[in-house]
Image (cartoon, rainbow, N blue to C red; front, top):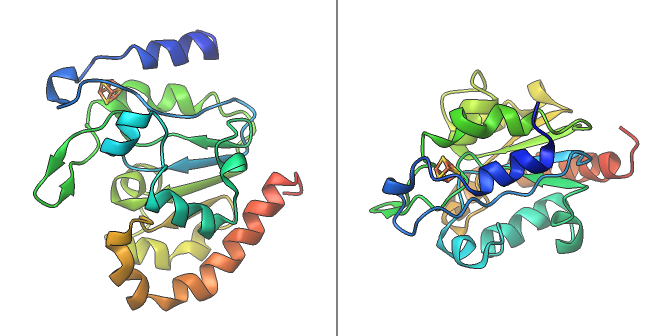
Length: 195
Ligand code: SF4
């Protein structure tokens, strides 16, 4: 079996769906085998493609606030793994960024997830990540997130933290009142090694 380092290098050189990527391949993920928390997003946006840093935007600020994490901890690969459903910016359509490229998960996902030997908590963000990691959680993001207690304490479905979801947050106040306080406590517990 390939070492983690050679696997990561293989992914970073990937060009499988290059012909579909408007800005070309630039796989972005954060992974160390010691990480206790996995955050599964959709795919990098244009800003992340340019900077090489995932969640370095308003969505990332909100996600860190939801989790009670500083940027230092969030970007510490030995604590938090960031493995989106697609590793390269897929381009933009009429309604915002396009879905993660469908070639990516079958090519790499299982191999990379197997590297996480100490995983204790998986946070699943948005429809594409939910379809893969919690396929039975519900037919919509709302119903999946509403079912969060069924997956507790190892997997937590979340809506996307994008400012585009402000309306969703207003319509679902239970998310911030009930789920987030428990999630923050769970994240702190895992990172303190108490789980
Ligand atoms: S999106 Fe995934 S499959 Fe496509 S080039 Fe990037 S790493 Fe490879």
